[in-house]
Amino acid sequence: MNLTSMAVDREPNKISRSRRFFPGWTMVGMAAAAQFMSAPGQSYSVAAFKEPMRTSLGLSETNYSLAYAFATIVSGMLLPLVGRMIDRHGARTMMPAIAFLLGTACLGMSRVSGLGGLYLGFSFVRSLGQGALSLVAAWLVCEWFARRRGFATALSGLGGSLSVMTIPLGNAWLINHYGWQTGWIALAFGVWGLLFLPSLFLVRDRPEALGWSPDGDEYVGHPPVSPRGGEQTPDASGPNRDWAVSHVVRDSTFWKLLAVPATSGMVGTGLIFHAVSLLGSRGVSPGGALGLISLQAIVATCAALVAGWMTDRFQARYLLSAAMLLLALSGTIVLVMPFPIVAVLYAIVLGLHGSILRSTGVVVWINYYGRENQGAIRGLAMAVMIFAAAIGPLPLALSVDWFGTYDIALCGFIAAPLAAAVIVWTAGPPRNRPGLQPKTLQ
Image 1 (tube, rainbow, N blue to C red):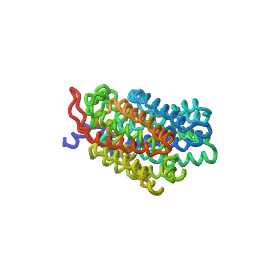
Image 2 (tube, helix red, strand yellow; image 1 turned 60 degrees about the vertical axis):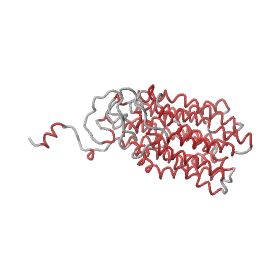
Image 3 (cartoon, rainbow, N blue to C red; image 1 turned 30 degrees about the vertical axis):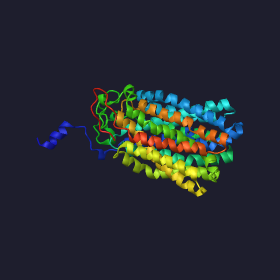
Image 4 (cartoon, helix red, strand yellow; image 1 turned 30 degrees about the horizontal axis):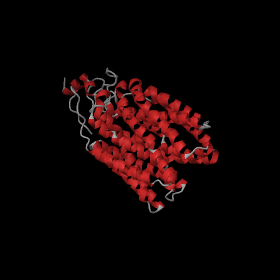
C-alpha cells in the first residue's frame, strides 16, 4: 500500500474545499442583511424622522433626545442578556426571532402619538435593531471564520455601509411624500421581507455542525462531536482557551479596549443624530446633510475590505488608536469649518473611522477572549457603547439649548477620542488567567 492510499484510508470522508461551496459565505451574506436591516434602530435612520416627528408631536429638542437616550440605555441594559441567549440558542433561532420583533416594533412606531409612546417605541427599535440584531450578526460571522475573521467581518459590514448609504435618503423621500408614519411601515415590511424570511431557511450556527472547520479549510463530511461550540480554532484551541466573563471583566486590557466603543458610541451617535441641524448651523442644507451621511457610508464601504485585511495582519490597538484620531479629526473639522464644502472632508474622515470600527472593533473581542462566550463578552462591550450612545445626543442638544451654539459640546467631542487613542495605544495583550496558555493575538 502506497502513502497516498494510506492517507485516503485515514481520512475517507475529507473532501477538498475547492470542490464544495463553503456555507460560511452564505452566513456572511445573512449577517450583511442583518446589519442592513438593523437600520430602524440606528441613529442614521432615526435622524431622518427627528424633525418631522418632533414637530408633529410638539416636543422640544431636549425631550426628544431624552426619549432616545432612555431607549438607548434600555438597549444597553438588555445586551449582556441577549449575548448570553445567543451563546446558548445560536443565531439560527435568535436572528429570525429578533427580525420578526423588530418589524413589529416599526409598526408600533408608526402609531406613536405622544411622549410616552415615543419612549416605548424607541426602546423596542433601539434594543432590537441597534442592539440585538447587530450583536447576532457579528456572532454569526465570528463563529464561521477564524483565520480570515477580519476580512469576513468587513465584508459583512458592507451591509451596514449600504444601509447608511440608502436608508436615510429612502426615509427622507417617504417622509416628504407620504409622512413619517408611512416611513416606519415601510421599514417594518423591509425587515420582514429581507431578513426574517431568509433567516428562517438559511442561517446555521457553526461550521462544525455541518462538518466544516472555520474558514472552510476542510470538509470532513460529518459533524464532529464537540461540546457547545468549544471547537478548535487558531484563537481558541479548546475549551480551556476560552475566557469566562468573570475573568474577562477582571482583565485590564478589556477595560482599556472599552474606551473605543464608549467614545465612538458617544461622539459618533451625537454627530449623526444632530447631523441635519449641526451641519445646518455651518450652512449645509438638510438634504446635503443626509447626503453626507451617505457619502460617509460610501467611504466606509470602499475602505472596509482594506481595514479587514489590516485587521488580520496588524495589532488591534494600533488600528483602534488610528480610529480614535480620525474621530477627533472629524469633530475638529466641524468646529472650525470655514465653508460648507469642507463638510465633504468631514464625511470622508468619519467613513474611514467607521471602516476600522466595523472590522477591528468587532473581531478584537473574540480574537482576545475566544469563542465560547463571545456573545456575552461582546454584549458587555456593546452595552458600554450603547450607554455612551445614550449620552451622545444630549451634550449637543444642551449646548444649543443653553448657549445657542454647538461649539461647547464639540470641544468635548474632540478631547474624548484623543484621550481614548492614548488609552487604547497602551493596551497590552490580555493577562492569561491561571491554567490558560499564552495566545497569539491580532
